[in-house]
Image (cartoon, rainbow, N blue to C red; front, top):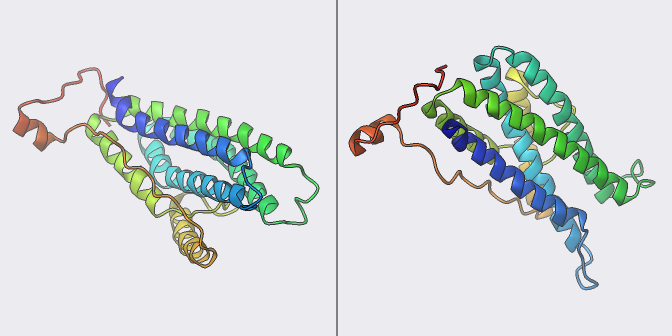
Length: 223
């Protein structure tokens, strides 16, 4: 479906990047001259994953609640698996920084939990995107894709599994956690990559008019 391309391709690209960063981080690559090199890859993976999860909370979940008939149940099911991933990411961070509660666990066990949770979260997120694409028109999906990107830019860079995720409490928590994470990123000299802006969006109605190239999709339900 064409309508899926805008939002769906953006989410697919993010998950391809996450998979590549996960492989890089879990390989724990380092050299004798750079003993903490592997931890740089871990920090990058944690930041990208945390930012995307928070952006889904901020942009996609409200849209699902508004636009999809059984949206509240879909959001509930998604949050269950998303929190499992956040918990797994929090365990990675704890293991990386020497928490006594994680000292007895092997890195292999920690990464296995993350890999399993990442697959489950990706499956649920794709379901959300598919349901939105079935309900929204091209313009609404363009706007939602841009909202997802902007939310990711200003999202927290660390996992916060026990913080509120939705509604006003979630909005306030993300703002507070973003400010706190930004402070510690600066103190620790932690490099956080910027999200990649979606490469292509459908032209808006004015652009379609000026180009004399309107989009018609008779079968696409309107919100």
